[in-house]
Amino acid sequence: MVLLALALAGCGATDQPTAPAQQPDFVKHANAVDVDRWDGQPSATSGINHLVPYGRCALGIGVYAGERGPVGTHWAGNADCTSFKLPAQGVAGLAAVSAVAMPDGSVIGANTVLQRLNADGTVTPLAALPPASADSQQGPAEARVIVRSGDRLVTGGGHLVGDNPAPLAWTSTDGGKTVKPVAVPPVDNYIGAMAASDNTVLAVEQTAESGRLAIWRSTDSGQSWQLTELDAKANPMVANLLRTPQGWLIVGTGEDEKDPAGQPFLASSSDGVSWKVIDTSAVATGRVVDATATTSGELVLVGEGGKSNCEVAWAGAVGSLRRVDLGCGEAAKATTTLADGRVIIVGTTSVWVRDVR
Image 1 (cartoon, rainbow, N blue to C red):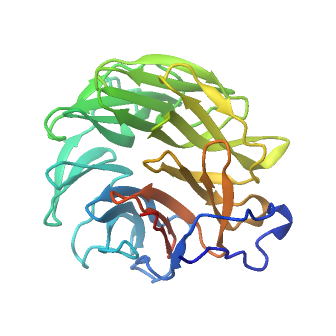
Image 2: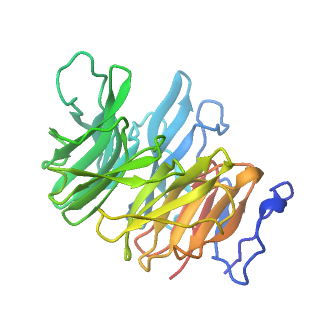
């Protein structure tokens, strides 16, 4: 395998720790992601923002810059998962912020409405997400994440009540054709991340500006929820919520006035109720945008490396993450673990593949 060590000039060598004797093996595939159709150039806000394991590879969810503004769409990974292509010109893409693969080979995506990407590549509109009530003071409902728990789809997000954000959740038992709002204990924020294991579903608010992070737990596939709070003094911005072989794991970026560059934030729980913040002070500074866990429980975090503003990954066990430099010049945007155990990272235009088989 090729050892990834793309520490390019100008990538902030001063804040990089000494490289360990053995680092995870990633292989970079440049110019592997279709870019904006309108001008042919990637932008900071366009491209793949979310990855869904699908078939032998994954489906990318995001936006591209169209003539009249951003267009929500999907990217299909090729057979060896080294490139991602947009749908053919004129073919509608899956316009979603999150999506989940279904047993029938379709993918359900969520935004203000649910949509189904069928196995033949066509997109079918499903239910619109209703607000919790018909109160005119409430803004439109918006999804942030969707998961599958048993025979139910569970969607999390929120809406504005006046000028204040509030969480919302919905369930569906018919593949998204209809959805039902469910009561969520309120906080002043949207649900930002969610994960499911059998009938247990956990959800986390997207930020913790007050220093306390709201965590919701359901043991009946999202039909009822209980609220707990984690003392998170680092005010984390949540990037993902993972179910690992060792338990539940919240991943994000913590920051305060003493650490403006950001620091990877991790909190673990065996039951989804009692949580422990993990010390990441030995990890170099940086901002985490996404994370995945392998079947063995190893983590891969991706983001931006502290003062360097270059793309990095942190990989390894929870308590011994090692930094892997991915290069400079584009944003590392999403990561996932494939069905065969490989880990992929997608950037603005590049794909990195780690083969652990």
